[in-house]
Length: 359
RNA sequence: UGGGGUGUCGCCAAGCGGCAAGGCACGGGACUUUGACUCCCGCAUUCGUAGGUUCGAAUCCUGCCACCCCAG
Image 1 (spheres, rainbow, N blue to C red):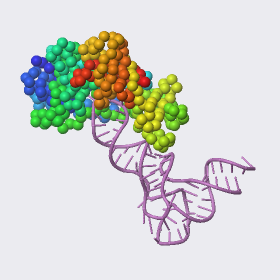
Image 2 (cartoon, rainbow, N blue to C red):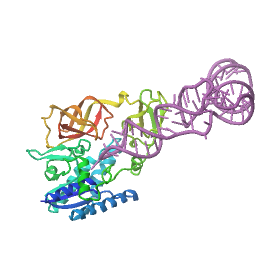
Image 3 (cartoon, helix red, strand yellow):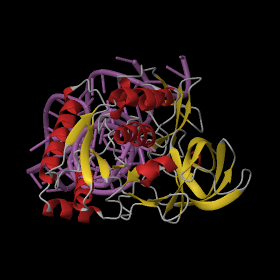
């Protein structure tokens, strides 16, 4: 069948295209450029990636195109990203990017090209053996990316393929090397999708004006320093505070943000009680199956990740139409509003919601 | 300008004659398709200052300077 592969210029999507081509499909490589770079740095990275995509497609002997969803990205992902930071929260733009861009705008584009599916290099698997399609973790536990895909629904899954989801990173690199793909040794990319790794505070400062204020110690209210603007800090953050040596000499962490008074509250020590919570309320629940596992008002046990790359946490979830109440068996460190809590049952990703408050 | 005390890296702080611990901050790296966290490495040829004693001093002595406290 005809399949459009979203190619980033990295190894994973390169191998995804390779596998589909070998399986006899009609593969079309498409590179997305969704971030209009102002500086030269990111522009160079994007240009380099595009060069790599073309090189890989030439080796595979498949056609390639570049598309630009910068407008959609700005309106549907980045606007929310900025609004969240302005509200003092810490968003995860990549979960939205997957729902709005890769598996909506890009998917629609692929369908218009006459493709039946879009494939990406995500480390996740789709179980299409039963009625509602299920999203499973990537087989390589160290690289699993199902966390970023929890907002996908049945339509997206029906048209999606993750060819490398059942492989380990080592196998992918070996396959790329064996096939002579020019991206076989390319370093894994990090940072916000399409924007990339950068000095985050400086990046935000380019969009959000600074409103400096006081930094106070939570227990005593004592003035311990000054901050450059509340939106530049996130809960549980240590570095960048610039304070040290006071109190008992231990590390300082951000424990609370008071937008009203423009105060940044900090506390000392990794084990400070104000850093830990067991209860959480999360909004905008979404389910891969497009309906909750239990009727509204009822609860169920499962595991959760309060952030990417966290070990599974045993929790109890109570489902309500517009929100989730999540109780953790063990205290969670720096559960941060704006971040996504993603739910799992074994290998299956059930869905998730956005953390509003924790206590 | 009477008495007492203190001056060691941005902050806190070991050191008490043998040639500068440690923590925090900061910088770099690792990890990582969010932000964080975490981990690793680095970080005072110099101890307020000027002399002196000594083979050798941040450590002993003297002057000066600064700050703090109590008297005023």
